[in-house]
Image (tube, rainbow, N blue to C red; front, side):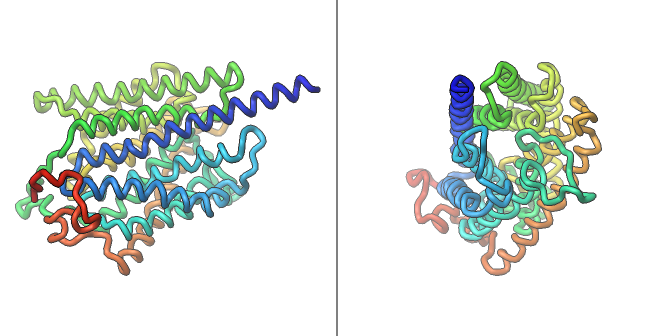
Length: 400
């Protein structure tokens, strides 16, 4: 009996340490998003982007702590590892839904209304999606109950953030001067490519905790193998997405566009997130390749639709969140364990309808009280001065 208790305690301790370590990697994605977005926007908006990302982490995490977590999972109790570690791991996810959104509305979004939306996303919208997928599931026993398999959130996190972003862009509109009257798209170049690269690789590293930690346990041989396979498959999909995006850009333009290569990698990472523990070691190559292709072709399609997304978040997170969830039903269908293509499709549809409609309603009413979009004059001056009272690069002459 004593030996059993010692083994049980050891398992509890190691799994707690593993989850805390995974959570720490996921938190690295906070500066990842911040650096990526700061590098892709103009210098006059960098301080605002950094402030927004900091506020999202603080506000969303606090809202999830005070209400969202227990709403999603029903209880703090956890017998397999420390309940505090389990909370911190789940808390690390919540801000990512708004990070996805904030990047896509950069250079024209105000901090206060976005912070208000972040509270509602962290306390209600995202926890509702978690409730019906990973949590206590108030839809159980109804026709809407889901059987979608989504290990680390291709739909639960990435598509949810993408649908919220789409709603925000439709309500806010585009940046000043982005689309010309004659139909031409004005190119707004990235301000700091080294920051873009740093941010993308911080996200890439964070993904190992994002997906690997979602396996849950590492204290058995089978568990250790599952974690290692998950992390390897995650990395493989990112590699494949980067490679195919680079080749497509070179074939089309005879140039290697590092921003598109990195977005291709991120697209592959999003796509594999739904089922990296289910795939063989070669299937993530196909999933990542398709993810990279989708990013390259989705970015100009959104621009043709005059949906202004400065960082390509819709293409990376929404499009590939959908593709990644479908990929589980295509490559890892297992009807005996409830994994089917129709189940994946149903999950995409139910979560998509809820995330888009609830976000649109909340954004609409907040916008009636406090406008999300900065005025054209404020955008011309730069949001750093208007929103923060300081500039990230005060010695640089700001472009309009």
